[in-house]
Length: 319
Image (tube, rainbow, N blue to C red):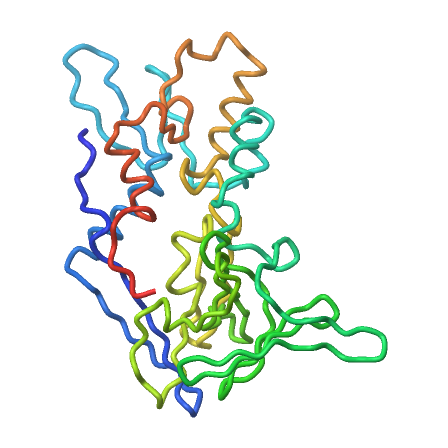
């Protein structure tokens, strides 16, 4: 079955949440090109590829292979069926793939989004409180917005003129810029509109790096668990409740874990564990279908491109 030639990097689905002065959210959906659907389809293919396999015919002249969802076969044995993909988290890969795990731990993938307790804060949040004085915040203004940054008791806060004060709960990125996320009471994770530029060691308003529309009547906000999640988390489920207009978002890992590129690993761990117990059952050269995981070493160039290209290919991002 040939790999579908889905165009990548030609469109982006941008969702901009506009919060009016009355704080009523209005969602504006914009498809920047007709290829957006194709790009989303490519993501789905990348995500489900690890749990698809071709069921090879056992008899000469049998019908062509067919694709079965969550189905794997080893030769002519009965297929192993997993009802749903199960993600285990990257630590589950460490025991058998120590070298690759160590390399991954040193990459930027793991730093795409991090809880504040696990993150290295790059931005200048001023001097924390000391005996005899309170915290000394850092002030910054640009593009008609004024900001104040401060740290108190190990917590970090950003105050934005006309919007309020937000506690930082997560960091976003670590290479060129570091952004900061605040979890709102309704479950939305707000990308604060100011970034720390690592090379120049200065704060920049998001309009300096992002084509933000001029709309002084609304508090435009980028919401991480609406617009950023596909390339900044592993196995994220938005869990939006339209009845309450709230999010109960879950994920296996913040950042790009092993399973973001290789697919859910529970079936792979199960079959390799069985091979450890019974080495004679292990094929001499296991196929991806037998391994029950997507292996780039055994994939076609197009499959590898589609895996990486969704986040690293050319695309027309608004954010």
